[in-house]
Image 1 (cartoon, rainbow, N blue to C red):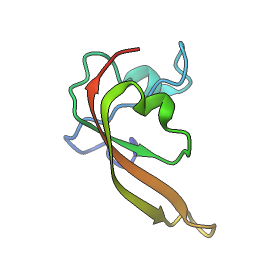
Image 2 (image 1 turned 30 degrees about the vertical axis):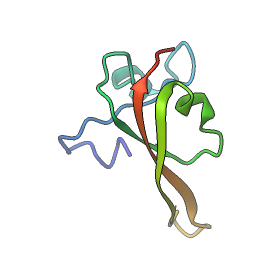
Image 3 (image 1 turned 180 degrees about the vertical axis):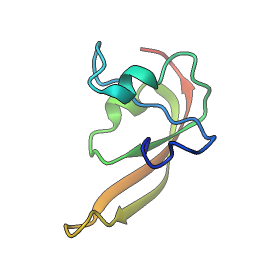
Image 4 (image 1 turned 135 degrees about the vertical axis):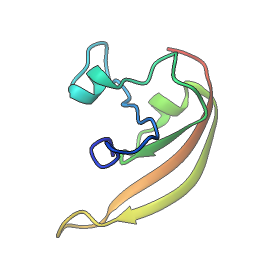
Length: 87
């Protein structure tokens, strides 16, 4: 998502999965206490609770199955998050 939206004015943030960044995007565009909410979580993972539990409100907007090359379509969930509670 960060790659495909690189020229868009909409801010895109990466969720840091641990205390240290794992990749370029977690280092240069991390979600932080300064990030304005609401935000849209775009998730390929089944376990979203480690992220959604940190917000007062989590509303699933849509579930999609997106093409992933020649393989099986990839499930993607879009969740509106608001009310950041912090780490």
